[in-house]
Length: 413
Image 1 (tube, helix red, strand yellow):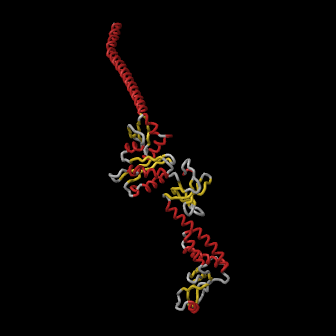
Image 2 (cartoon, one colour; image 1 turned 90 degrees about the horizontal axis):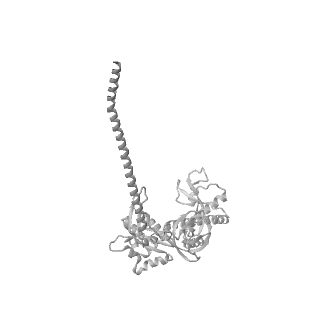
Image 3 (cartoon, rainbow, N blue to C red; image 1 turned 90 degrees about the vertical axis):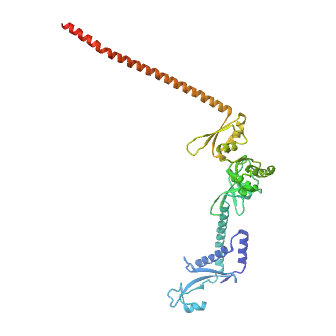
């Protein structure tokens, strides 16, 4: 046996406290390292029935081989006589197995080198598995981190046991990410790599808004108010549709809070991003009207369409057209994302012009149809007159034939 003392166990406990690696994993790694060193020292490709045993009370470790107790030994590598076995264990019998120490002499230095390599590898694997499991559980949730640095437009954020990457497309446009600042991010994905897992986070994801509302609005956390849909243009504007499961609770009022305290906290967290709270409705017309707020709507016509595309024609007052569409189409685009309906917006004057054009086109089509019918009637009348004249000619033909025959008879006489 090799005396290693209690320092090893103290080191294991310290690693468990600092890195969260269980002490059992480190002890198991040390035992595996001893077996690996024994195979290397004895130049064995395989080492069956070989194991390392660590006595935590004495602080000693050794390599042992399991042998079968027999009356007559035929294979010394795997078998031991009963007399020899009784020297090790007094109450042993034929057919039992005994563990015999085979730790080589001057094995300490070789074992230490092998143990260092194996334990280092096992610690890395254990850390990787722990981090992988931790962040797989955090995938799809909100977490807080500290900005470390910016590399090639990617922001590196420390979120605990590893650094996460926030790509440029997941950042808020115009936002300055200063190293050392705390930041709330959404864990998008966790990718396994040869070293520590690669964690992808986002600062522009719509679910960040959901998490903030769940934190600030107790009615949402309790399930009284439900978030039905979120559409976000990160850094500029967000629309959120809410619904109350309790008729006595106003879903929009609950999200705004007393004197706007709740919504102001969320807006401050999102760096003054504008938030429109929309009341959800099962009626698509009402839902679309609410989604286009703050603009007023005159009418909404549902357009029948094939496939999964759902369309609606929305008419707004002339002075509300730019507000309904929004800068660069932002308002109508977010309303489309929020409701899932394809929305076409026109002003009252545009709609009147379209209707006038439709009426004019209709009248022209009616006039063309009338003229076509008139020409058809005239053509039919001409055909009928021609057929009548042909019938009269056929009636006169027999009389002319009789006159010809009479004239022929007179000539013959």
